[in-house]
Each structure stands twice: as C-alpha cells, then as structure tokens.
Image (cartoon, rainbow, N blue to C red; front, top):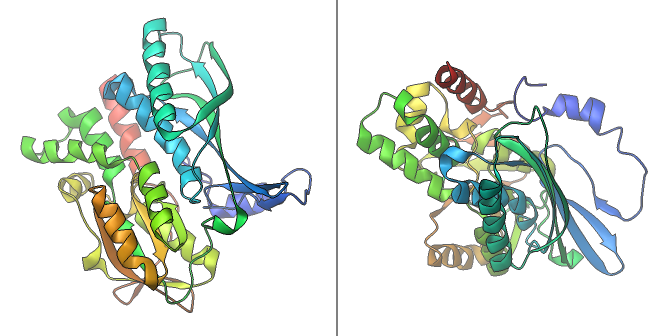
Length: 338
C-alpha cells in the first residue's frame, strides 16, 4: 500500500475485502475499492452511508476550513443521488485548538447542515494529546431514499455519455497555492488564479442537482488518484470501457502552471468538487443545463462503450495507484516547519 494516502486495490482485495465482519442480508452495497458509499435495506427504504476522516486546515480560515471538511464527508453520500440527511461526527481535537476556534468550526458546520437539511444525530468531542491538524476526527453521514433511485457507482452502461464538472486538479492546486504560495516561484497573477480554484471544491449541491435532472447512471467524485483514478474506478466497477477526448476536458486557470512547477500530472491529483457523471443520452442536455444554471463548469468528455478500461485519444490509461500531491504536501510542510 502507498506510504501516504488511501490503501491501494491490491491491499484492499487481500486484507480488507475478505474480512468484513458478519455476512448480513440487509447490506445491499458493501465496501469496495474506489466506491464512495454503502447501502443498507431497512424495511422498504435504502439507507446510504459513508464514513470519512475530518480535516480542518486553520490556514484556510476556520469557517472555510470547516465547510470544506464537511463537504468532503457529505459528498460521498450525495454522489448516490440521495440527499444526506443525518450526521454522526467525532472530534479528536489537538490541545492547541481553543474554545473560540472550535465554536467557529462547529457553528459553521451547523449552518451548512441546516441549509442542506442534515441533522446532527450523535457525536463525540474531546481534546487529546498527540492529536494534530489537519486530521481532527471522523464522521459518518447517512441519507434515506428509495432503492430504485440510487445512482450506483457501477451503473455506467454502454451508450452513456460522460460529463465532467469543474475539471482536474482543483482541490490539490487550490490548497497548494493557498497554503504554500510563498514556496511556489510563479507570477502572482498565476498564484491568484490557482488560489481561486479552492472555490471549486464543493460538490454536494452539484451532485444532487445532476441526479435530479438525469437520468444519471453513475457518479463519482474526483478524489485521490485524480481524474485518471476516478475514470478507471468507474469503468472497472461497471465492466465497460470509457472513451475520453482529452481536448474536451476543462482545465481551469492556474492548474497547469502549478502542476508543471511541481512536475505532477493534473489528471492524477485530487479534485474534490469535480464529478464524473455517466448520463443516459436522453438526459445529457438536462443535466448540463441544470449544472450550468448553478454556474458550474461542465463538459461532455466522452462515451461509454462495451469493453474494459479507459482510453484517452486512443491510448489506454491506468489507475495511478497513489496521488502524487501527497508527496508534494509533505515536502512543502517539512520545509515550512524547518
């Protein structure tokens, strides 16, 4: 498994997948590598749930950091097309986080949950020695819907079109430019464009908007492993081939310059806020209009065909295995600490 970041598929398949506790009939979708959520059958309802670490980066400003950390958690349920509705959250706070700072974080989470219709149902809050930013806890989010309305992660079908919101690299580039701009030898206007990418990292409302406009057959947020990883995970799960036109993929200002500076591929780095959507051809125009009405950048980047893997301009691409941005973050953090 990688030294930093999520476990790879080989480790997951060998050590995690065979060891999942009790075998229960009410588990409709269980843990799978690259899949964002699970599904339980409760009476006639589908309960969609996901668990993620909670990050708070004070350098972003506590309100923005709290909203970012929450959106990452809620997004893993939202990509099912079911609205997040209940949140269980655990804070393991570093000793240096004072009461006023935590109050700001908590009140921001409350306001965003209130706007999205999400109730906080239980949790745990405490300070502990040896805890440190940015990883300050974890949370589980649930949504309740109907089984037939769930957008399955493995639902892409031959003939679907592939849409992409925002484009690759937004989250990683936005964070690098915001947190470590002084370490990046690029013109200030380029860095400002890169910092602005952090405004693109929220996708909960986009996911629910797209699902409502559909029919959307599969949806995945672009997290670790970037766009290349997301495309491969979706294609592998559905047992189909994704044909991608590289020139159709939107690249936002600042992305290429920062990635070139660090020698990383923007398609391989995390871009929370970006969504890959497999859409039935009958719904493509509706989905695009609905997202554009929200002023979200969206592009038709390819199609789903029979076969396997991901092909970009006639060339097969494979999952990068790990996210190179983790190494860049670690190197820059060590330099600034020194």
